[in-house]
Image (cartoon, rainbow, N blue to C red; front, side):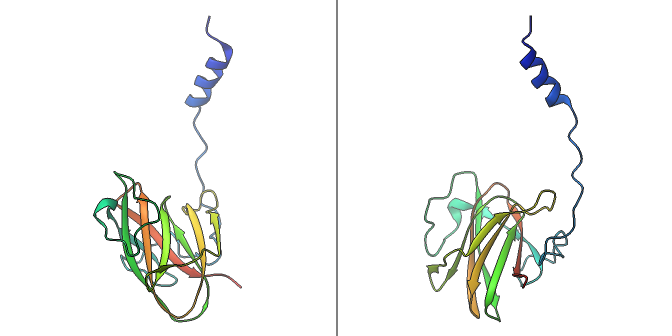
Length: 152
């Protein structure tokens, strides 16, 4: 005799899941889902090509070693106006924001809303200048990233 719990679990696994219907855009990320190319710029989603994490020269070095079989990269960001900026990622990955060799403190973080296509959102308080986005532990060789000012 097959236990009832096993039958229910098998039936649930065979039941089609409801389709994810894209919800209203996330404030500040209205153009999410429309990548504008491979370069990070405020207000535009970029599709960034990543390399095997073991072959990326991170500066400063990662706080935790990259896992074999994952991907990463090091990308410049230019900020013209001071403020809180949020960075959205299409997939799970480790993210550090660096300026002049120093990792910046995270101001806030959240998971992206269900069905938004955004896996996580991290916020940093930034001054005008050049920053470097360090990505590591991504499962795929490319990732969607968008930088946007926080809504008022």
